[in-house]
Image (cartoon, rainbow, N blue to C red; front, side):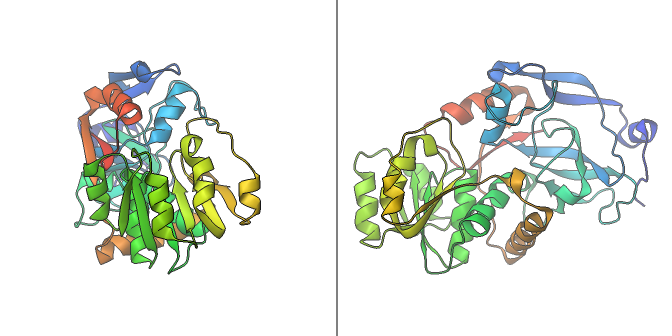
Length: 341
């Protein structure tokens, strides 16, 4: 039977402890502000919430921006980062009927933060984790796959037969976008900065890859896509690539901005001749109905077997600062970075 309306005493009995390890951020700054504490009180699931024993937690680029204080969303300090966890239900709050203690789950949001031994999440941000996937893969689904689906279809209105360029395809969102676009009938082009990254993406949905560290890679994309150009671009680093993206688009083409680390100067005239669009993408703006649409499509993908997250660098919780440093400074992404708890 699920543990109902658990108080701290009940949680302590269930887990055998009342404190846990958790990463806390008490000031905005560099990776060094991520402090691992071992005496953080276990969170208590309230109504419509669940307590999860975390096995793995995905690290998303946006978490480095929020930690640095550079993002528009600034959580109240102190806080624990992390939205994408995979683990096992430890306890459920009142009115939770879809999950029970012992269920394997993954999330695309948490309330108390995922860089921790345990986390509390709202039940509607928690999903069953198929036996086809391990916990590390489960931690690589949330933000990357929901963002990729939203960028392609809810905002980009991609159609079967169109060409999509995933600009920065070897990371979590990039690989997700390639897998999804391929199965939905798009022609999938991608870029990556290393040979290894290019090969990973070719095994995960891309028809053709380009090395964005080569000086002439844009010319190669133009040559490959021909006069028509590219219908949809999923852009991970708009502050570097947006002006170039506008040159690659087809008439009526769309650039979906998934990531940017600063400003860029563009010529608006480049959008006029093709009536192209630049569209920002943020999961934070998605309605409950749109999130449910993403959930339905992605759970079907797991069941069908085509949704297979590629896990990249793995770090123990103790090395979280090094993980953040790696994420920002690496020469090229190779799958989804995860924390092992």
